Length: 483
Ligand SMILES: *[C@@H]1O[C@H](CO)[C@@H](O)[C@H](O)[C@H]1NC(C)=O
Ligand SMILES: *[C@@H]1O[C@H](CO)[C@@H](O)[C@H](O)[C@H]1NC(C)=O
Ligand SMILES: *[C@@H]1O[C@H](CO)[C@@H](O)[C@H](O)[C@H]1NC(C)=O
Ligand SMILES: *[C@@H]1O[C@H](CO)[C@@H](O)[C@H](O)[C@H]1NC(C)=O
Ligand SMILES: *[C@@H]1O[C@H](CO)[C@@H](O)[C@H](O)[C@H]1NC(C)=O
Ligand SMILES: *[C@@H]1O[C@H](CO)[C@@H](O)[C@H](O)[C@H]1NC(C)=O
Ligand SMILES: *[C@@H]1O[C@H](CO)[C@@H](O)[C@H](O)[C@H]1NC(C)=O
Ligand SMILES: *[C@@H]1O[C@H](CO)[C@@H](O)[C@H](O)[C@H]1NC(C)=O
Ligand SMILES: *[C@@H]1O[C@H](CO)[C@@H](O)[C@H](O)[C@H]1NC(C)=O
Ligand SMILES: *[C@@H]1O[C@H](CO)[C@@H](O)[C@H](O)[C@H]1NC(C)=O
Ligand SMILES: *[C@@H]1O[C@H](CO)[C@@H](O)[C@H](O)[C@H]1NC(C)=O
Image (cartoon, rainbow, N blue to C red; front, side, top):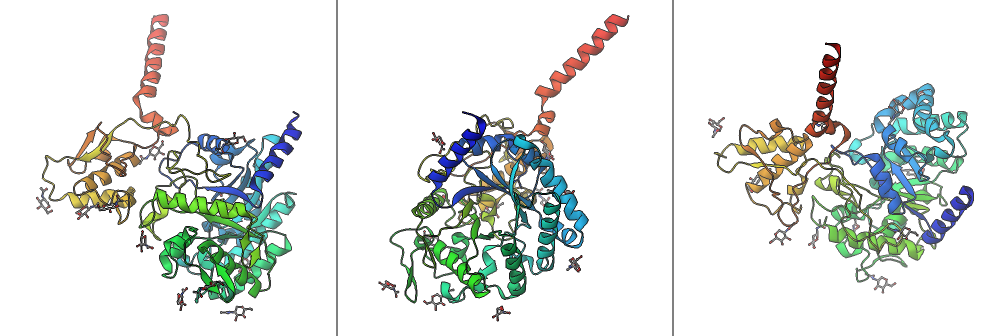
């Protein structure tokens, strides 16, 4: 089949399979040892994912996506918003360096579909620090895209956090935007509708469950037996529909009742909090997929499901900020090393995911506490390890919350040791650490071995010794020749 026809065919197949809105996935890279981008692209392809949303514009990631035919959203970090608001020139450079360079590469380029301005800049915990820059930055990026003649291909969007819209009574008919965002939202919606861009918003039944006593676990998980919520004559059977319609009302209230909605983040974490487990995540994701496939829409937008839905997230990230909660590092459908956590797939929801293949790890070594030493001062060392490494699995409800002292100290030591590429001095802890080749994992509590990344290869004797051998041989040979 000629390539063009083939593309059309794949597109048709995809459209038929998805029915309503397309399903995509968020790919974040805030990890100490990220899975190599080429492996991640293979992982996406083998799972038939066709849309991917990045939270930045990492050159290695965009390089790996070149020629992949995936639809890509690139992101602008919040820290750049101030500059991009005040300088059209900075916006032009940004577009040139992070968009034009990749799309203009013909068939081997990256299919960039959206530029996401900011990473949830309106999250309440950020206060109002970004409010005044977001729209200006979005406008400047749009102008820069127009100058690069990419305006018709690449749309500008702003991902809005789950807490940008709310309803005090819990009734969707009383939904509105957070008062401090009132003016900014009207400016944003005016901008988006002028350029036919959709509204990107996070929906988070998991966070709703934690913040609202009226939401039951069954209601969040799409269970058929959940007690419905009534809003005058409308009946809500799940938390997703409730949040979605709160947003629909918020949009209508400020004059944009027809605004297209893209769910830019939705998912369920598997560790670091109560009810964050693989089995609840599986139930949630299957319920979500079934709901999206049914194309039933919501009470306020019947038969009109979200235009697109991006699962949050592809992989666990051990360096995400935990200021909002210890579950933040565990949103992945896959573990950090690309292994499926539960039964799920991105097309039907009910099949099996395909794991990442040929993943390279550091050697099978762990760092544990040396039980033969006086451990009276070990707490300080473990706290220090946890302040840098990832101890979120030890928190209440976490997968390692049940291991007793000093097993939990070993967990902290090992996490630090792995993050430091298993260097001997990172298992010292004032002489209290001990390197072992026996896997200390117990039940669900997994003591991980980190990934081997290209640079850490260099630390490892295999390569080093090969190079040294080559070097020494060369020197000896030349000595022989020249004498
Ligand atoms: C991906 O699509 C192919 C072809 O339609 C199918 O055979 C395969 O099972 C799908 N894989 C997954 C993980 O859905
Ligand atoms: C955003 O940029 C505009 C245009 O340069 C400028 O007038 C405005 O003061 C900037 N906003 C803030 C909050 O700095
Ligand atoms: C994008 O472009 C800007 C400006 O040229 C550059 O500083 C930045 O590192 C690039 N990457 C990201 C992720 O913003
Ligand atoms: C929770 O339900 C009670 C009783 O139905 C209601 O008064 C209250 O406003 C609701 N709160 C939220 C945040 O949904
Ligand atoms: C927000 O804007 C709407 C429409 O302009 C207005 O009715 C409402 O009172 C405003 N709310 C706040 C808190 O400013
Ligand atoms: C909600 O509405 C349904 C059907 O309209 C009704 O059967 C049910 O009793 C109502 N529930 C409450 C708590 O009002
Ligand atoms: C988590 O689930 C249990 C039931 O499995 C429930 O009792 C508990 O209240 C839930 N926790 C939260 C924060 O919703
Ligand atoms: C523990 O710390 C205290 C105070 O710093 C110190 O006096 C003591 O010798 C330490 N004990 C061990 C076993 O290292
Ligand atoms: C921890 O132990 C309690 C009691 O044995 C059990 O109910 C709970 O499921 C365990 N939690 C984990 C994360 O294994
Ligand atoms: C390990 O468990 C002990 C006893 O339950 C506790 O005091 C300590 O804070 C825990 N340490 C860590 C790093 O979780
Ligand atoms: C571990 O190795 C990677 C390169 O593979 C490097 O970027 C990173 O800084 C190293 N980490 C530490 C803590 O040394």
